[in-house]
Length: 347
Image (cartoon, rainbow, N blue to C red; front, top):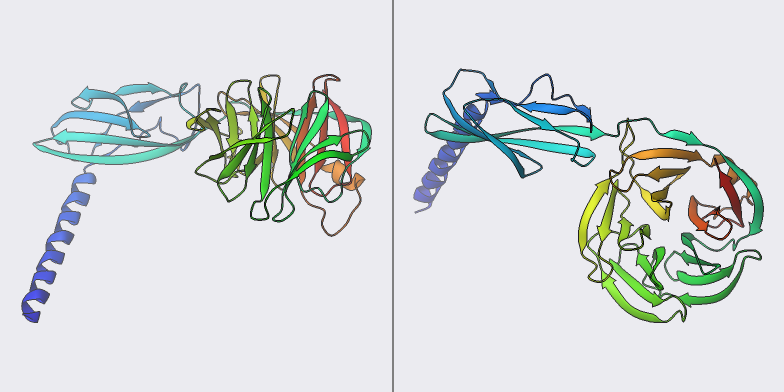
């Protein structure tokens, strides 16, 4: 019996490997690569979807998919032009389902789409410096009715607080349970939304009373959060920013953050300002100004000199925290365990 089982296993292995070899041989008959499919492309460009028919097989038809969405079909091996203007930035997967001589096979390839233009460097000027709690591991920073709200992190130390930004004093505070690592905050329609890092749980508070109203769940890590007045925008430490329904907390869409030459990962604390997302990039002393429709980084603000203006100590951490004051039309920035916040203007 043991010999029979071993024989059957060997036969099945041979058949399986033979099928794989046949499939690979079929796939090698065709290729999607051509001169238009460069490794990096821009949104204003287009590509030609057409096969290289290496052994002149009689192709009946080809169906093309980009990122698993059908974009068109052709008879024979006709060229299918495809404009990239409606695609997301980032990696794209092309699949061709090829029907030929009574057989079918799918082959794939890929490319990336980067932003069309180089980000413009914006300058800033410090107009005032204020005290900031040196023990605040700043994760969220936002004004609401003239009061500076702040979310802080670290296990056993995470809080949601109201702060008098001029004195740096905390006027009201909620401490999260020790098991939560607090992350970004935002205010939408008099509700404060606060994320946690790895716990995949968020909290909704009444912005006026500071009372917890409900909790919500999400599938990724929680980093930064902002809103456009209708939808929530959440980052998870990658290049992705998710667009979320504030009532159901379901992800409706996403954007990928790219410059004209790189993917921008570790998108962190965010603020919606004049139709753009202003974002800290973790461990980078800079602000990226992001187009929320495309994910393209349109501007960059180099804030590296600010770190030298705060007290240097062992717990000093990353530049993080952007709050726009609609009354003064100025920007407030700080960092994790920084003892100062800075009011700046940008041009």
